[in-house]
Length: 109
Image 1 (cartoon, one colour):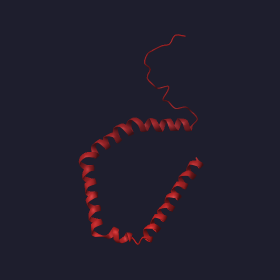
Image 2 (cartoon, helix red, strand yellow; image 1 turned 120 degrees about the vertical axis):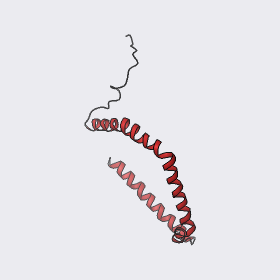
Image 3 (tube, helix red, strand yellow; image 1 turned 180 degrees about the vertical axis):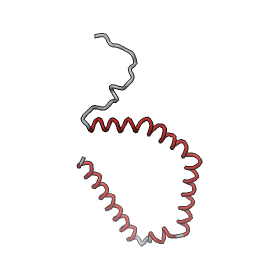
């Protein structure tokens, strides 16, 4: 667990260093990020893209995504996942194999 956390933290530090280097390179070429972000053209474009994304979500994506999230992911998968993680944490085995449906075939020794 600690190894995974240190790897995650190392990845965050690398990303942060890369971001700082990118800012330095942009500054070297004389690009003013504040002027770009605050320009009316940029604000207009960001507003247009945001309104387009909201319209796309409201009219096309919200119902199927929320249906999948609530009725399939949460109801069918999440409870089983949490139960199995608790069972494994307590030293047991997962319940996929004992609860799998059988086909009804038998093997003769």
